[in-house]
Length: 304
Image (tube, rainbow, N blue to C red):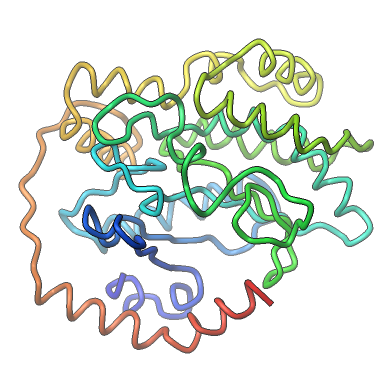
């Protein structure tokens, strides 16, 4: 992360972050997640165009280290060692309640569309261990500005923030995900905001997959966006589970790293990694000390 910051401080001072695990989870892995972000973009196509650039920059910065775009590493069982795909929507004040309600109505379907964390502790869990267990998200609350839930009014940015989605390496899948969000945000009428229904459907998406209730939700969305149903019938999580069963976890990590960098999920030889204590200390100091004022400001604004 320090390399990213040094190479492009104007962007990555604000548009990068890392996440540390908490409590007992730190014994398994102190920090497993890094974050990069795009600038605000007007369309899904321009967003994806910039995202390709940011992925290339991150790939160059990390060198031989693995980039594994999943919601939760398969060999860990750490609810605070998770990472997500967050989408921010700038919405006029008069439309915020309608857009929030409509996103909440269809969000369980989008959770399944992005699901990418099928394992915990080396054991198969279901489509998304992260959605079911991560400390940083959860069912919708009465207070939409409370940070640790799936969909919020973000205090700092003034946006509607979708927090529930798992990372997605496949740009075709991500393209359809963005198309869905765009279509839902543009719906003219408000769907009902039923938090109990939402909690039930998010659990189905995280633990069971494409249930009859989610199929009905897909049929409701289909008139507004031509999302291919195959992306829900066979999710990224399903594909990763097949890889793990066939190749093992380490080989799947190597394949996912290749997919993130080059756009194709294929068998590649795992490479040896040699952690360096001194590089870690130097990187920590150069990244966090330089960004400490902004980190403090960001944390305060996100809760006040």
